[in-house]
Image (cartoon, rainbow, N blue to C red; front, top):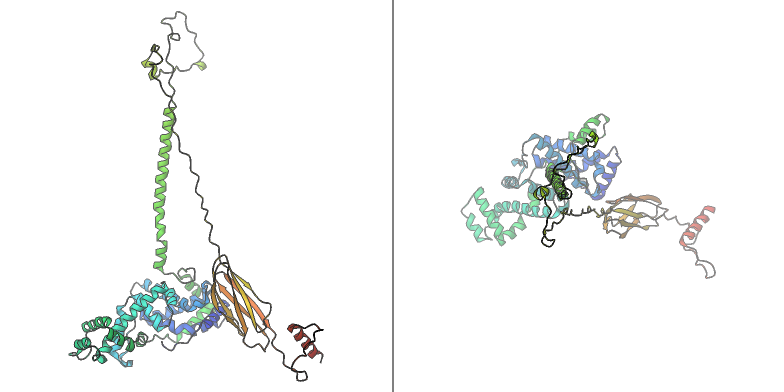
Length: 525
């Protein structure tokens, strides 16, 4: 790796705390720790110095405005790389042109120009994600979990892509290296290159790469002579311009740059639960299920229309089955053939329409003289039974409980103390940060739901009095324990080295009472 400043997790915690407090020196410290490596990463993606400098500038300014989104301070490094990658992708998408890829090596400053050109050509053959995995892992020293967080991959996917990209690079370079020095160790390799002199052609190099990938002898020599991390050192480092540091600091702290800072923060993309930026294609994949809404709406309309038809048809059937046939007139009730008496004229309000004869009455106007046993029986029509309504199904699933971190802090510390942590509701992952003068062991861990652990806190210099605090950051909230220690008092040369041993008849004083009585005696003297 190039000679970049080394930043450990403790320094990352200090940077996060300084950014959250909005310290005036925080932007400068952030750039001095990560400015050069972030610019080199952006330069490897684009190959353009101006675009890389603008992307790093906006990424560092955004980091100070969005620092509260970062839930775990220990992931500051991968978070900054993810912000830089997001800024580079936004500029390339706005411009509409593909990136230029890794920068070309300078032949004048290379001890082996043929290998340098081969490394550049091989990196160009890799896919964009595989090349980034190789750069972040071997050149920038990120762990598989950090690489996965930057590229939206799992740790297993990052490891698999790294192995594939590293083998591709090392085998391609091993074709040139072993063609120079390994002819005597493998007869097949010697037969392929004995009659060849000068630089290898691309066709011959691919043939040698295929042989090295399947030959045990050449594969063992390749692993001993070719290292992917050293090969990436042949790629020129993209150092940032000298003015970039001043630009970042001015935009971050200058009151006159508030509008520019606000525009940079508003152009930011979405964030996931851990605070990492979400790229545009990932957001589109998340929103894709929303396209089911028109289909669901159309299905609901069809069901509503079907229900309306069923209700109408059921109403018509009910009306038909509720018809009652009028009784057929009999001989006793039949009107006379001729009535000489005039009918009285009824009032207009009392006139009612006479009922029309039913079909059965028109068919049978005489009484049925057949025996009762031979008469056809008619069954009354019955209404169709309606199915009972089903009670709506209620969702009885309770939401998952939210994790909460419980802390039990000691009142004072006498060189060593213990802090109790407990997880309530759900599992809790925590990270401890101690101020100057205190050491915490362990510094991080996980607690199952309902479980508890104890953290050991040690004073680095117990002879001097002081105070400090231990902060805990977790997915269940944050907590802080404030501790103080009095330190050991200097020995009085006029007093004996040891306190007299108390007799059995006198009560034995506790260490705290003995220290208190000693200090009172010294004050009286």
